[in-house]
Image (cartoon, rainbow, N blue to C red; front, side, top):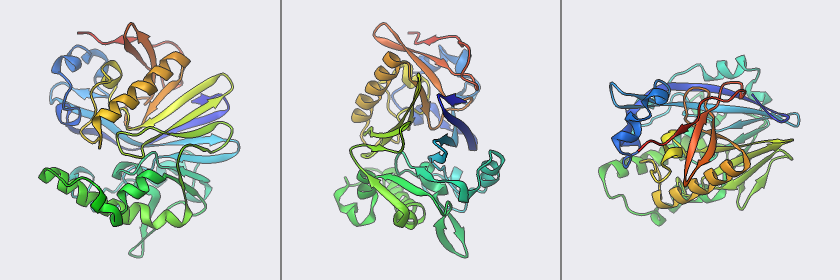
Length: 312
């Protein structure tokens, strides 16, 4: 698809069922899913298993003659005890990038919207037993707030884990930092406040999911879009934005941030591009009284697919 002069290509690393929807969005009522089953199935929900379906993917942006990757997925060969589904994953992701016309040496900029295992994995690859940058000529853009927060030297500043699951996530984040973040810091720009990549692309803070979570805004000609990372895991969060995912470090702040991003998107006609939506992967958001309505964008972002409003 194109957003003005910016070309956008989605490259999937993995797609499928991850966990029960009530585990991913713990506060979401069953009716929110069942009443919207006609369009949530099959890309976002499996009503037979009750499973949340999503995608791990990277977006390729070509802007002003440069190649920019937005988030880099899980990566191969990783020790991920916190989520066995992706432990020692082995996918032909780099082959899929090549099929989209991008070799590792072609990449100019890598954007990590935040530091979670499924957004930084292909920052590096394992060569001769050592983690090295996958994209040798790229500048890695990492929110400074997240780099500081997840740096193992600052672990004492984070709240103590309250459950065994939280402890496993904490231990997993140390592995993620060691194999996917620390090896690229020599090529990284740790930005804060905001960061302009070029005249079309700007990074802005969007805290809550992690302290340093960010969004990438694209504005070119009359078109605009916002790549929202993990502010949204499912389209039902557009219909009912008060529900944060189980992965959010600060669910209340994530809700506030999500509302602000959706309001701006609805008012300004911004295409919303989350990290983990299946199908075409993008959504059009409109106001529906005091709530929002959503249209799932087609793969070419043309036409007007039916608008989905939350049914109570």
